[in-house]
Image (cartoon, rainbow, N blue to C red; front, side, top):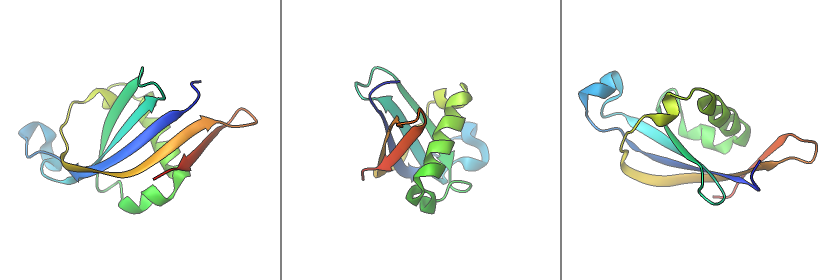
Length: 107
């Protein structure tokens, strides 16, 4: 594992594009997951709902969501521009003392 993994969460609106179906024009969040040197970067988008801004207060929920999306390769590769995106939260993921994964909110 890298020294740490950065998770930045941006909130904005999905573009009003037909390819996005029912989610077009809806509020959304973009999760940018990267190693500390940005050598490996993945981004994925989650519509609101099911994602809720209150989820940002629970780092364990964010950790679970990030790892679940990274397991589904096709989801993390979808190209979408998030309109009016603003940084809503930032987390640092590190290896835990007992081999687990620790996550802390830094913004």
